[in-house]
Length: 538
Image 1 (cartoon, rainbow, N blue to C red):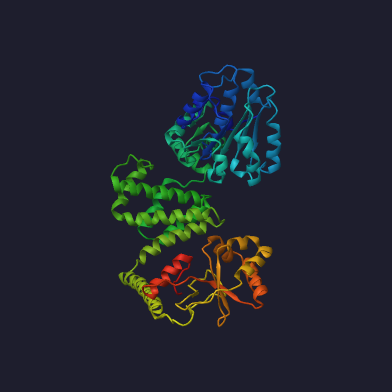
Image 2: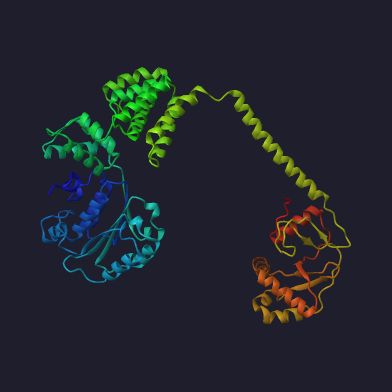
């Protein structure tokens, strides 16, 4: 049976994990010193070694002949784990086993001691796919598992893992693998497989893998299958992954710089008919314009991805394009690249991007447009200032009538609300008589709502028959909060008043006026602040 390269060359020891030295060193030291944790979380980009590292760790902690922190791969435990005969190591795909019943079954099994190995280990791949119920079921067992149980979670999306799980795991982030490390690895594997992999082809495969070793090996595998003579060169890579040739990229770039939209669209159509993927074409264009940008900034070719011929052409483009135009091209292509992943009309998206790049540059923003935009913003600010001034004038017009209760403008529907958008009612310097049988009202409240009665323990009621309002003075924050948040509590208080006084009354807040008051506005602001009421007029 043929094994794909990424399976055949899967790392067997920590030393074979490429590009993750910070993780490898830590785990080897923990295994060697017998200080392994009960729960690990491996996160990071796809194809960087998370699952491989989890399998090696599972073997290492159960190895009978440990080699400086690495599994020996020769003992019965190592061989049994590799061939799947030891059932104490369970690898779970959370994408298809993400229900709460799956985790409950796991939790029940975890309390059985291992049959052969030292540790019963659960490797949960794509852990972010677990449901909320499954995470909750996992929570307790992952916090305090039996001493012979270990959990290793692997995910590409750490943001979907609940914080309660994160805090119970040792976290290791797997970085994208360095391009040179990937290139060296696939060159080594090619030699072992008796394949001639040309260096420029290896470099192209590395670039396409975007930091993932598994992707690099999958592309190499496809190229080997396509080749008829065990030779993998640039032509084979381009055909397998539908990559445009360098000449095509240079030609499109030249016509973009020359603003010849007709030729650009014609070239795109020809390439698509040759089965070139528009998505790959967009990626290549972004990379090439990035090289132009870097060379224009630094004048050095050390950080460029283009080959020697492309670099020579690149130098001819430097004086014909500005940095701002390069930024615009890269931004537009990047935006449309994201849109291509959500549609089947990738060619149309690329054509629209090209038209936008060229047409927008032919119609730059005129100075008059900028001036008009600034004037519009200024007019908006002036309009808001005018409205603010009108509100201040309205407040200044409010005056005190010493012989009656004064009401400020109120647009709220609930006229007895203790917390309206504005200060609804307040007492003037007129003495309002107290409710004589207020204690009887509180006694009735004892039966209707004991909590409300307790909140009104030290309160007083004041009655204004002309307005049909009973004003309540209470320093209890609980009472104010209860009346504000509970319609039922407010109605219960009204019922008690009606039952004792034989008449229905509205209710409102009451504060006794202070002597030597300042201005009306100051008094209103102070009173509002005490009651948590906004006095702003809308």
